[in-house]
Image (cartoon, rainbow, N blue to C red; front, side, top):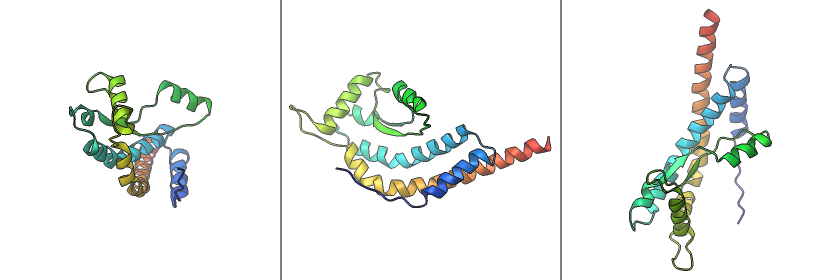
Length: 164
């Protein structure tokens, strides 16, 4: 089911981020890091709720729910091919703690959606439903704060360079 969300004020934030990169002396990496920090902060409630909602048969799944920013090689290649520069944050089950990434992923999918032998025990979707409204507000507020901080740092750095 498709849903539409109307965002207000994000064009101004995007313009401020572009100014940070072009006028103030920040780099593209600075812009990406600002977005990454903002998205990671906004994802914290999702991760906490997903962990709280996870099935507790063995207790391992909730330990393996993590928030991350790494793209797969295929995603990275596709972004470069398309000339896009994304900052993404993913919340999900990973196998880093146990070293069994494939098993952890399959277990997470099995619990979220169920199968012929097991009823669904969703934990990610309820976390999304409970936090999606606040996440947009949190992203807007945190992005504004992060842009201001990064702009101040870049201006201070430029002033230091000018004195030398």
